[in-house]
Image (cartoon, rainbow, N blue to C red; front, side):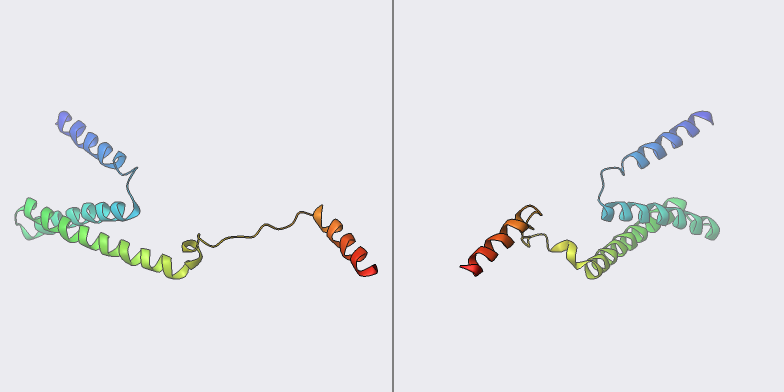
Length: 113
């Protein structure tokens, strides 16, 4: 029994560590699959059917739900934060405070002549 616990804990650690370099869409899809697999297994156990089949069906449904949820969240983010997508707009440089008095003095000289 002890070796089974070590294998399960190692699988959980590898599964969680593997999510570090994923995009948010991939993370939500994998999370949905994991939650769906647990739910499918629980439903199969209650209904006294094959647990592996319940887990597989639950994982598929959960992965699809996680992916669709991620697409919806991405669309909402773009709709409510449109300025993040306009990085191509050129910004002008503000004149420093040292340049302003010189410009004012040049304008006074030009108007007095």
